[in-house]
Image (cartoon, rainbow, N blue to C red):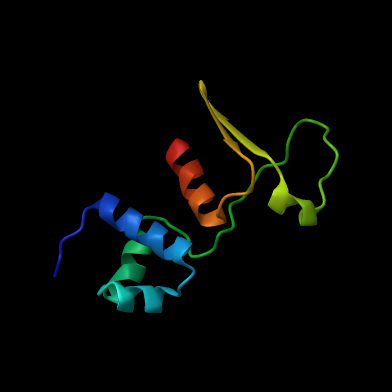
Length: 102
């Protein structure tokens, strides 16, 4: 069995989420034990859901209908770094990025 670092597992779990495959199918395709994959995912605090809780904004901004969010411009600022997305990135990838920046 191949030993993987924490970073290896994070990358593997992220690749599974981006693949669109179920964890079972991804594990089968990559010769990974599905049970251990699930355990490592929980240990690393990576949710199976793409839901990320968001606190309400303190600014008074008009509400944007959900239907328009797929094509919305997204700008993330962290310190002096600013990331611009012309389209919404994959929710799981975005959640992982936010966790890493926190």
